[in-house]
Amino acid sequence: MLKAVILAAGKGTRLYPLTRRIAKPLLPLVNRTTLLYAFDRLKELNVQEICIVVGENEISIRQALGDGSAHGVKLSYVRQLDPHGLAHAVGFAKEFVAGDPFVLYLGDAIYDTSLANIAATFMERGCANLSLVKWVEDPRRYGVAVLDGDSIVRLVEKPENPESNWVMAGVYFFGPQLWHVLPDLKPSARGEYEITDAIQMLIDRGQFVQAGRYEGVWFDTGTLDSFLETSTFLAKGRNVLAGTVTGAIGANVIVGDEATVACGSIEDTVVMPGSRIHGSARIKHCILAGELTLDGDVTDEILDGGA
Image (cartoon, rainbow, N blue to C red):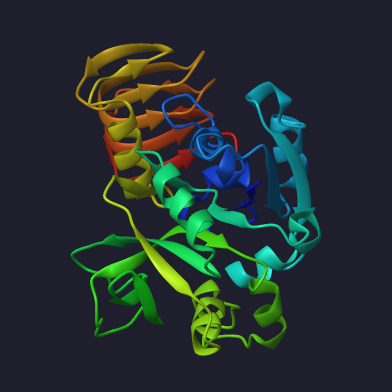
C-alpha cells in the first residue's frame, strides 16, 4: 500500500506578512485549505496514511487537521526542527514509511488532474524513483531533468543554461532505496540537502529512475503572483464572494467567509476569511487579511492588519 509524505514545514516567507499568522499550508484557496487539495490527489492514489512534516507551524496545523478523519485520511506528524532542504525534511519520515513505497508531495503544490496513472506506472515498474516532470518554457528556476526516453539520466538544480525544458514538478515516488543514499548526501552550494541530489545519487549508483510526464496544470502557490493565479484558476474565472463587498467589483475577486469589504474598487484580489477592509482604495492584485483601512491605489500588495 502506497503511503504519502507531505512537506509542510516551510515558513512561507514569500507570502509575509500573511504567513506570520496563518501557516502557509492552511491558507485558503477559493475558501478551502490548501492542504485539502493535496489530500484529494492522494486519495485518488488509494493513499490512506499520510505523514505531514511540520515545523514551527506544528500546533496550528495539528489543530486544523487533527487525525485527518474528517477528511478521509489518517494523519501522522513529524517535526523538522531546523529546515535544510527537501531531502533533509523527508528523512524525518523514515520511521513512518517503514520500508514501504511512498509518494513525496510538496504541501503548496496544486495539480488539476489525477496522478493515478503515474502512480500505477511506479508501482508496476518497481523503480527506485519516479519523479513528476513538466515541460516549461523557462526551466532556469527549477530542478531540470535530462531524459533518455522515460529514464532520468541527469538532474541539475536551477541551471543557468538548462539542457532540457523538463523540470521536476513537486511529486516524487520512492522505493526504500532512498534511505540508502540519504546518509551520504552533502549540502549543496546553497547549504541545503537537495532532493534532486538524492535522486542523482540513485542514478549514479545504477538504480532505475524514471520520469512521469505530467501534462495537466501545475501551480506552486508560494508567491503573490502564483497564489492569485492559482486562486483564479480554481475559481474557474468567476468571482467567489462568501463575504460582502461594497464598491465596484472587477474580475477575479475572492472574498472569504464572514469578510466585509468597502472600497472604491477591487479586482484580481483575495480577501481572507473574517477580514474587515475599509476605505476608498482602488485595490488590484493583492492578498488582504485582518482589519485594514486603505485609500488611494493599492496594487501588488500582501497586507495583513492582524499580523
